[in-house]
Image 1: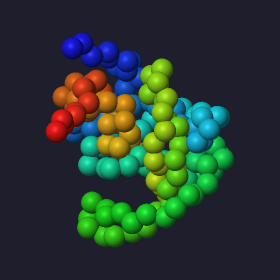
Image 2: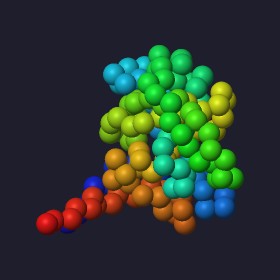
Image 3: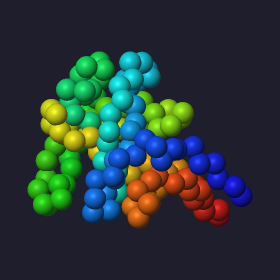
Length: 136
C-alpha cells in the first residue's frame, strides 16, 4: 500500500524542543471565509484550539460547552463548535475549542487523525499514516 503525502513541508515553521507549527486554514462550518493561521502541533491536545476572536470573525458561534482537563490538572469548561479546517489541498470538519483571544492556535489529535496524519517531531513535519481497522 502506498500512502499519498499531501502535506508540504514548506508550510512548517520550527519552534524548538520537538514542537513545530504548521500553516492551516480554518473556516466556518459551511466552509466559507477561510483564514490562514499557524498552529502548534500538539499530540497531547485532543481537540484543536482556535482563539475565539478568530472564530468570531469567521462567524462561528459556540454550539456546546465541554469540560476539559488542563496540563496542570485543573478542570475547566470551554465552548466548542464544528468548523472546517484545511491542511494542504484537503478540507474537512473538525471540532474547535474557543480559546482565549489572541492565544496560540493548537492543532489537536482529533483533527490530525481525521486527516490520517501524525506528527514527526524529529523532522518537524506531518506524515501520512494508514487508518486502523479491526475486523471481527
